[in-house]
Length: 321
Ligand code: NAD
Ligand code: UDP
Ligand code: UDP
Image 1 (cartoon, rainbow, N blue to C red):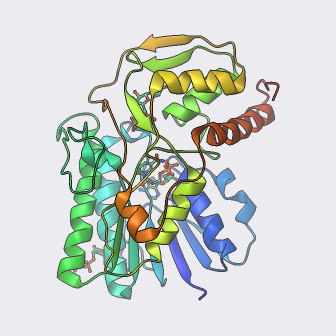
Image 2: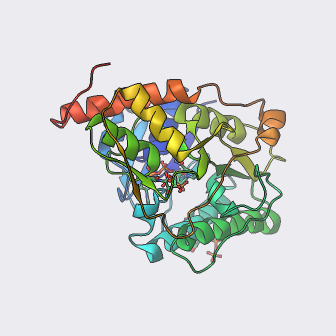
């Protein structure tokens, strides 16, 4: 059935891929974004498509639209960006959630929340299961994001219990792929851009900390399956790739695939940077029949090809494939 769908944060990395899939399936999409970290280039191929509408708006302010479904993704995801204006980050997470939930309540429509593995903080349980309550510093530099997302989860579950809303809360683990910004600041884009430019590869700390990286195509498939699932399935549900890797090893893989001459440089580790992270995706496998299909080697290859073409267009260096 053709639906009218609102995607907040739709000019961002994950949001723009999600919109491509929604439009490809024959839906009408309204993309709401304030362009804090998103980019018009991520959605420029959709401008002029009668099924696509772009609206510059900050979700911390009320918004009245008529839609059948809401995906709430608006929020900067990279630590350097969400820490630049931490008060705005909390407002985006909390006021943004309230406004989108208010809209879902008025329209009686289903609403998806892009929550995060950061709700587990620096986890004492490994791998992380959905019933783990987390280990989060409430007053540190990451708190605007972590606690903002935790409060948003609280709001989603209270609107569900109090107002009977159909909610879908996904805890997204580190996701990467084409359309991350060159200056995004997250590890995969930083390392690839540095490697392609033969610049020093910045490792924060000794690189022994781990993450588990999911290719964006797999993530969007998981999000869509979750949104289409039975209304009793509220989440929270982990979505991510359980293949865990240290940051140092990731850097070596990037150097290998790019054939770069870059050397590693070790910088100070940021405050409260989690030591280990890996999703337990048993719930998503059992309820959605979903698991990632793109391994790190293939995902890196495709992401590197993307950044190579972006840098080439910007007059940067290209590497031999
Ligand atoms: P992104 O920064 O590329 O996209 C976020 C988008 O939200 C941007 O287009 C930005 O301009 C927009 N935005 C920010 N504040 C806004 C506001 N107040 N009003 C309207 N728009 C606003 O990040 P992403 O990686 O695409 O992440 C999308 C969502 O998924 C975020 O909510 C993020 O917290 C969540 N998430 C992402 C990851 C990941 O690894 N990519 C992991 C966990 C959770
Ligand atoms: N809201 C919105 N769009 C809507 C409906 C509501 O932005 O279509 C906002 C509204 O401004 C309010 C918030 O969402 O501040 C929460 O709405 P709700 O109805 O839950 O709360 P109330 O209006 O009763 O405070
Ligand atoms: N990191 C790094 N070099 C960089 C960027 C990040 O070593 O240039 C590290 C960072 O300290 C963290 C991991 O890589 O341990 C993932 O960082 P990112 O900002 O991508 O995501 P998050 O910390 O939110 O998982």
